[in-house]
Length: 77
Image (cartoon, rainbow, N blue to C red; front, side, top):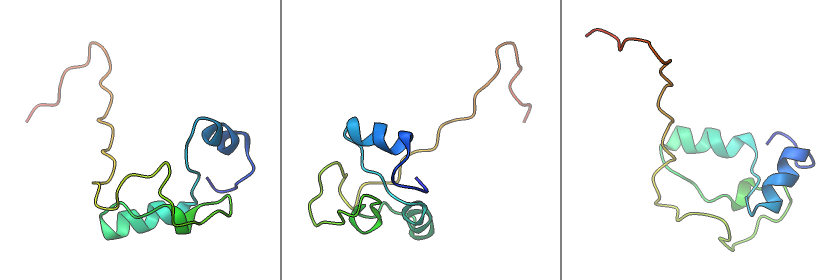
């Protein structure tokens, strides 16, 4: 999230999510690994606990595959 007090951030917290700023995404991408969320949390609770986090050595989340429209032919190779 860009801002900590938005309806989307509130909903994420209510569902047990961790709200981080865009710097976390950029740093994970730059280093090609998933970083701890603590230092990037937007709710001000950058703590050492790992509640709601995956291990540091967890692979980055996979990218969703592109959606194929019904009736569309696959690309020719």
